[in-house]
Image (cartoon, rainbow, N blue to C red; front, side):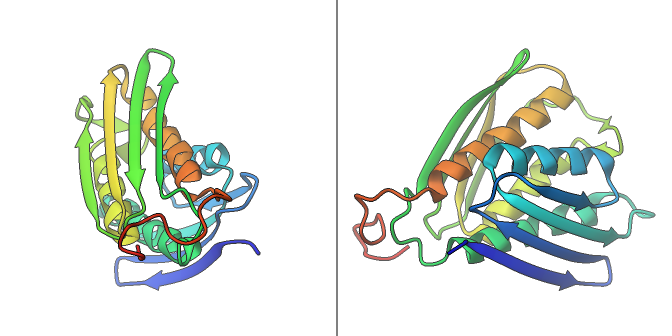
Length: 195
């Protein structure tokens, strides 16, 4: 059975439809209205081997903040729903990922307790039509909506584009590992008996 979630979230600032399949092959259909963000989400889905469909209509006449933050909220919610009861999954995932001159680290725990740690020396500005500061806001929203412990760190800095791309891809690979099944795990991987 595929682990998937389909979510619609409508506010005065954004209207979002998302479909996520954790057991996909990397197929995407993405339109957020922010080209660089579309590129990042495409990389996330393809490198995590998730099928991802996203359609966002946001108040881009204001700026990109609501569009990107709210998409993070919806993605986190979709991850939480799609992963289900977490029985048999690895729970933890990590990846150190190179992107040309950049080296990024992502470690996460699908523990049911949100926590976010972020260390990335971006140069203030924009990457195409996306504000640099929105990388942090997006991942913060994902971590809290998914109720995951998420650590992102740039180990070796470089240009903004490469740092952002490395973080999205590292997150994808870490999440793919955390959601993978291990036949040795019969229940949830917790001394508490629940996650």
